[in-house]
Amino acid sequence: MTSLKLIGAGLSPFVRKVRIVLAEKGLAYEHEQLAPFGLSPEYKRKHPLARVPLLETDGRPIPDSSAICAYLEKLQPQPALYPSDPYDYARAVWFEEFADGGLIGGAAPVFQNRVLLPLLLKRPADESLAKKATEETLPPLFDYLERELGDNEYLVGNRFTIADVAVGSILTQFQYGKGEIDAKRWPKLAAYLERVQGRPSFKPLIEQDRAVLKSIGA
Ligand SMILES: N[C@@H](CCC(=O)N[C@@H](CS)C(=O)NCC(=O)O)C(=O)O
Image (cartoon, rainbow, N blue to C red):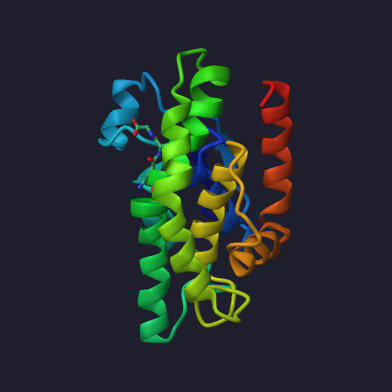
């Protein structure tokens, strides 16, 4: 059996994304907590962008949550998290990129300036950056998600896919920074996030994170 070791802090939305995929696929793994600050030269040799997560599979490194999730899909194809239909497949990969290359740009300033900097790192934070992200960066992205959801329960092919893992994990990070998705303005998105967070793969991780956040006064 393949040995899997996931490296990265549990509060990272990209580490969470991989943990959700591991849980959906019922894969056992070891989890080493590692914050992405002051990383060792040895770690940086494996992940030259000096970020988390990193997966070690039988000792071989795979950096980046998207590469890791693609690997896990091949390792354990069921339940499939990437659609087989070519267009749906492209859309699922697009939403992974939308989360990683777009949504995080709004969620990160909120989490960083309300939790990471003031409470975890004890460094000065700038609330104006959290406010700007909430009021300017995120609303058009939420509008897009609201439109894309339409009357569907999930983002692609109306079944749970990597798109929902990626987007759900980043939206959860926004909430950890006391971000709120206004259900009057984005009713479908708000209901969708609750649905996704209620899955057995998401729920225990969010409970663990909430306990950590509570212990630091967030
Ligand atoms: N595209 C990367 C993003 C990973 C990422 O940005 N991780 C953050 C933690 S949430 C990090 O390691 N940041 C440290 C840095 O950028 O210096 C992935 O999907 O793994």
